[in-house]
Every structure is written in C-alpha cells, then in structure tokens.
Amino acid sequence: MTTPRNGTSHEDVLAQVVDQLCAASAEPNRAGGRLVLPSRDVVLQCVEGLRQALFPGYFGATDLHDKSLHYYVGAILDRVFHQLGEQVARAVAFVDGHDVATCDHCRQRADQATVTLLAELPELRRASRLGAATFAAFSAFWTTLAFHLATPRFGLGSGAAGLFGLIGASGALAAPVVGRLADRRGARWASGVALGLALLAFAVLAVGGGWLLGLVAGVLLLDVGAQANQVANLARVHALRPEARSRLNTVYMVTYFGGGAIGTWAGAHAWASWGWTGVWATGGVFVVLGLLSWALEPRR
Ligand SMILES: [Zn+2]
Image 1 (cartoon, rainbow, N blue to C red):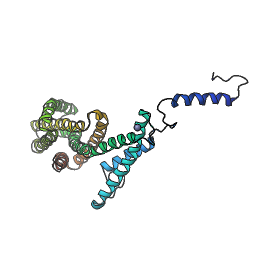
Image 2: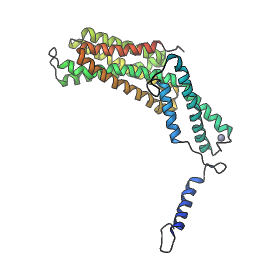
Image 3: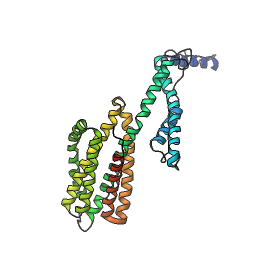
Image 4: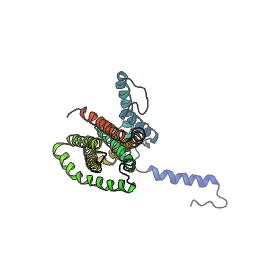
C-alpha cells in the first residue's frame, strides 16, 4: 500500500514508491544489469549535424570556402556517424536485450544502418532541391496573380484568381501519367520533363501574360509541371527506402515549403518593384536554378 497512514514515516512510503518505479523499468531488456538508452540530446545534435551537411553554409558555419567545404562536411559526417551509430547501437541492444558495451552484433547492425542512412543524403538533397526550386517558382506566381488580375488591364477581383485556382487544379490529373512515366523511364527523367514544362509555363506567361488566354495556358502548364515535379521527386525519395517514407518525406517537405516561402517573398518583392515582368522573371529564375541543379546531377 502506498497510501501514507498515520505512524508511517515518509521514508517508508518513498522506499515503496522507488521499488515500484524501478521494478517497472528494470525487468525486460537488461543485459548485465545495465540499462542504456539512446540520448535525446545526442540525437538532436545528430539532426543538427545532418542539417549542416545537407545545406552547408546555410546551417552551422556560414562562411565556407570551396577548399574547406570537403573537410567541413567530412568532419560533420564523421562525427554524426559515430554519434548516431552509438545511439542506434543502444536502441538495437535495448530491443534485443543485449549488453551494448560488449555485443559486436549490435554494433555491426548499428554501423550498417547508419552508413545506409548517410549514403542516402545526396539523393535526398537532390530531390529536395528540385522540389524547393519548383515550388518557389510556383509560389512566386500564385502569390501575385491576384494583383496582376486587379490591374486596369484586367480589372478582375479576387474571385477571378480563385477561378484560376480551379483551372490549375486540373494539373492534378497529370499525376498518374507522370507516375507511370517515372516508373517506365526513371524518376530523374520525369523530373527533367517537369522542369521543362515549368520553364515553358513561364515563357508563355512572359509572352502572353497580358491576355487572359495566355494566363490560362501558363497556369495549366505551370500546374502540370509543378504536379509532375512533385510526383517525380517523391518517387525518388521513396525509392531510397520505402519503409522510411514518412521520415524522408519530412525532410523533403520541409525543404519544399522553405522553397515556397522564399518564392512567395521574392514574388511579392518582384511585383512591387517591376510588376508582372518581375514575377515571370523571378519564377523563370527559380526554374532555371532547378534545371541547373538537375543537369549537374551525376548520372547513374
Ligand atoms: Zn547485440
């Protein structure tokens, strides 16, 4: 009984509480009487390290020279490998009920899992970058479309921008087509087609953006391109490790929406300074950045 009664000292009560708490966590998974669990603080350090390795210069050290970049990223990855490997080994040992200090099997499994994770980083970053570039272009356009439609040339209210949204939504119909294309010709190829469509969209918006028909054509191309880009990139990310979809998605989507935020900001500024020309030029630059990143990918 843990209820304090008159005449029971608080030490007696606490001793019982301690017994019960320890009994609950001690029974399974204890090798050699030790309980070693992954450290949340160290795992957070690893996440921070991975962020710095994925986007050097943007996180962590902000002044990097080409020559020092290799040392910098290498040192981070080496540290993450050892720190994360230790945490994974602890988790494996806990689940299997082994002693992490002495078990070679736990250590080997942990090292293997950690190396596999780190080896996926370049492809994850390639897909994330293409997603961010395309969504930045997409956001630059959609942020400012209502302003453009409200100018005297069109004189249309915000309802018109909503109608354009409906037109754009038909881009979703392209998703299954692109999915099949990615399966047949490879996701990288599909990414290239998507970026090409997005570039064509901004060319159409540049030439025909002063007419409703030009805007409709541009919106259709842009939405099909953005949708295709998303399908192709997610296919690449999921191909890395199907069972880790949600974790890889998180990295991809955070980068993707980061690109969207930059695009929204840049589009609004471009509109304020240069009007419609600024908008299509900004969108076009983002797509060209995506295309450059795509073209520079190593062929495998
Ligand atoms: Zn083991």
